[in-house]
Image (cartoon, rainbow over all chains, first blue to last red; front, top):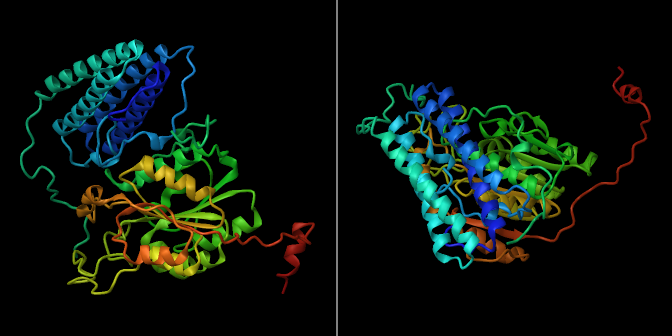
Amino acid sequence: MTALRIANKPELLARTLTMLSETVERYDLFADQMEVVNNPQAAEIFRWLEQKQRERTQVVQDLSEGLALPHIPPWDYHWDDAINIEVPGHASAHYMMTPYHTLTLAIDVEQGAADLFDNIERDTELPEVRKLAHGFAREANAFCDYLKQKREQYPLPQAGWDEDEDPPQFLE
Amino acid sequence: MENANSCPSLKPNEYKSGTKPVWCPGCGDYSVLLSITKAMSELNLEPENVALVSGIGCSSRLPAYLNVYGFHAVHGRALPVATGLKVSRPDLTVLAAGGDGDGFSIGGNHFMHACRRNVDMTYIVMDNQVYGMTKGQASPTTDPDWDKSKLTPGGTKINPYYPLVIALASGANFIARASSTDPNGAAKVLVDAIRHPGFSFVHMLSPCVTFRPEQKEWKKMVRPAPVEPTTDAAVAAKRLMTDDNFFLGTLYKGNRPAYQPELKSTVEHLSELEQGFIL
């Protein structure tokens, strides 16, 4: 929803809720995938990210209490793996990804969300939309900073991190 | 905003079964699953009124992950099963799904005749140009110079199969391409395909990140087709013959009436069916 004019507060809430809900689902999926491929470190971080996004989703749900949110069909959201902002794309995960990669993925998502809300705040003429977008942008930026701090605990992956000594290819 | 449905009664994730997919991380099929659930939600389909029939292969695992009726059929035989189901239960929304090997090689003949019959259903082929489940052999849509499989040293040297062209020539009534790299755009294509009467074919690009990792580049190569859907088969033929395999969207919408035989059952009790099999 980059460069989008928001019609009113319920629309911004509806779009934000969908964005957060999809992010929760995606982190849940990635955590499951990492558990299956025996990558517990990445799985643990994805599970933590899922929980954090659930908490944020609940906050936006509380803000939406009593409001009739519009239904917006999926094709009016421009999230795809090619752009890969705001909601992590399915292709973002790799079975050998490290905690550094995992947090980098989440940082990119938060940065995309922060930029989006900044744009909405800048472009709107509606005070209530501006105020809400400002709050969402501030929160996304703060979480992004926190994730960057957390990432410093982990070493930068070396070149060849994705080289598998026991690859799945059948080469006999 | 174009609304398919003003207020879906079920959210997309309510169409999922709860069984966790076992595809590789990064596989395009996760995204296709999401697109199907979004399309069903937008169309307000009741799960008990939908059946998804698949063949064999990675993508054919789909029925397990949805809470609609499912049938995981024999290799290449999703379409005959789906055809039989639809003509006997025209009230159901019938989807068939599978991969490029399942649909165009093992089931290639069924594909052609399903297009020809034009029964009202939607066939989704997740094309990754490789047999993934058997660990990476060339499929009908693999480029002739792909040489990563030791079964085809130096590549197959055979021209790939062009499913959209075959579909048009065989009589499919709706032809479109979508990509797992754009799940929301794919949901729109699926909504249109399911709504359109007759046999709808959706060519779904879905990269195999394990055996064809170079397909990650597809996300940079796909783009919306710069044309409106045509109802003219001759225009569509030229369009599809010059297609580079990366244009997305609905490319052809025919107006042939769907095939639906008159249903007449003379059997009142199941035991009557047995009579015909008594030796």
